[in-house]
Amino acid sequence: MQTGSEQPDLVFVGAGVMSATLAVLLKELDPSLKIEVLEQLDSGAAESSFPWNNAGTGHAAWCELNYTPQAADGSVNIAKAVQINAMFEVSRQFWAYLVEQGYFQSPRDFINPVPHMSFVRGEKGVSFLRKRFELMKAHHCFADDMEYTEDRNLIGDWAPLLMQGRTGDEPMAATRSLGGTDVNFGALTQKLLAHLEESGNATVRYGQKVTDVNREADGRWRLSVEDKNGGGRRELTARFVFLGAGGAALTLLQKSGIEEGKGYGGFPVSGQWLRCDNPELVKQHQAKVYSQAEIGAPPMSVPHLDTRVVDGKKSLLFGPYAGFTTKFLKRGSFLDLPLSIRPNNIGPMLAVARDNMDLTKYLIKEVMQSEDQRLEALRKFFPEAKKEDWRLEIAGQRVQIIKKDAKKGGVLQFGTEIVAAGDGSIAALLGASPGASVSVSVMLEVIERCFPERYKSAEWQERLGKIFEGDEKALAENGELLHRVRARTSAALGLTQP
Image (cartoon, rainbow, N blue to C red; front, side, top):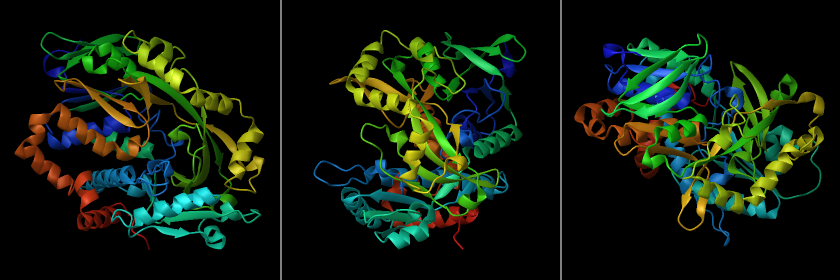
C-alpha cells in the first residue's frame, strides 16, 4: 500500500473524457493537488470516449429532435435544447482556454466544423419541424445560425445523398446550422490526459482494475486495485474519489455503500453503426443529419447519417442500431447486469421491466435485424445506398439509469446524472448522451457539490473566471454574452466559417 506522501489527494477511476475533464479542471484550480487516474484498459478513451464508439456529435441541440419534445396538443418545448446548447458553449470555453494557454496544439485534431441538420418526412413531421424552427429561431442561442426549408432542391444542395434516387412527392423539410461540429472525444481525452501528466503531481496508470471501494474511519476512501499486467494487487487511499468508469461506475458506486447510491440500477443498451469510407460518397455528404426516432425506440437510437472526422480522415456513419447485452462495458462481463442487482434496487428494476415492454420488444427486433434490414433503414436517408459501400461497426456500450420513483416504483432515465455522497468525498457519473458534449458543465457541477467551500472561495472563483466568461444559465439568458463567447471560442478552436 502507498503510504505518506505517496498517497494521492484525488483518485479518478476510468480514463475517459469525464475523468480527464474533471482532473484537469481541478488541477487548474489547485496545481498542488496530487492526482492519480486508474484505467483498467491499456490506454485512455478506449470505451465510450473512443471515436468509433460514439457519433462524435458536439451535441448543441441544433439537430437532435428528441431534445425538443412535442406534446399531445402539438406544442413544442425547446427548454432542454436551450440548456444543452448553452452547456456545449461551456465545453467550448474550456477547450478554447486550453488552446489559448498553449496547452493544446492544433484543435482540428479533435474538433471540426460540420453542419448539423434535421430532416423529416410526411405532413406530421414537417409541421413539427416548422414549429420547432420558429421557436428556436426566436431564441438567441439559435437565431443567427439556423435555416429552414421545405424545398427538395435546396435539401439536395445541403445534403445531396438525401435526395439522390428519391421519388414521389412526399412532404419533407430540413433545418441546417453551419455552426455544428464533429468532435473526436478520443483525441480530446488523450490531449487532456497528456496535459494532466505534464502538469506535475499527476499520474495516469493503465491496466489497473479497481475491485473494491471502502470508507476508512478517518473518512478517506480505500481502493483495492488489481494490476492486470503485472498480476499484483495494491491498495491506496484518497480523500476524494471520482467514479467515471462508464457503465462500471454503477458497480463501484454500489460497493462504496453510500446511502445516496442505493436504489440505482442500470439498463445496458448496445449499439452498431454502418460505416462508409468510400471517398466518392464521403465527399458528397458534409453534415450530421438527424431525424425522428421510431415509436418505442430509446433516445440514443435516433437515426442519423453523419460526417465523421477521425485522425484527419472523413468517413460516413449511419445508425445507431440498438441492441441488448448484459455487459456494462464493451469489454465488460456478461455478469455485469445480474451482479448489479441488489435488494435496494430490485424493486425499481422490476418496475422498469414491467413498464418498458415496448422498449424490450424494440431492442429484440433490432438485435434480430439482418444486413438487408439495416440497409433498408439507411435507404430512408440515402435511397441509393449500396451494400458494398458499408460495413458494420460495433458502437460503445451505454448504461441507462434506473432509479426509484414514488409513483411507479422505478423509472428508466435517459441522460447524464451525478450521484455524490453527502460529504462530497465520492461521486459517480451515471447515464449516457449528451454526456461527453456537456462534460465540462457536468464536471463543474461535481466540483460545486463535492468541494463547496473551495468552489465559493475568492481564489477558485477568480481562476474559474479566467476560464469561463459565463455559465450555461447566463449564456441561455444573455444573448450579448453568448454571441461574444461563441465568437471567441470559434476563433480559438478554428471553427470560424470562411
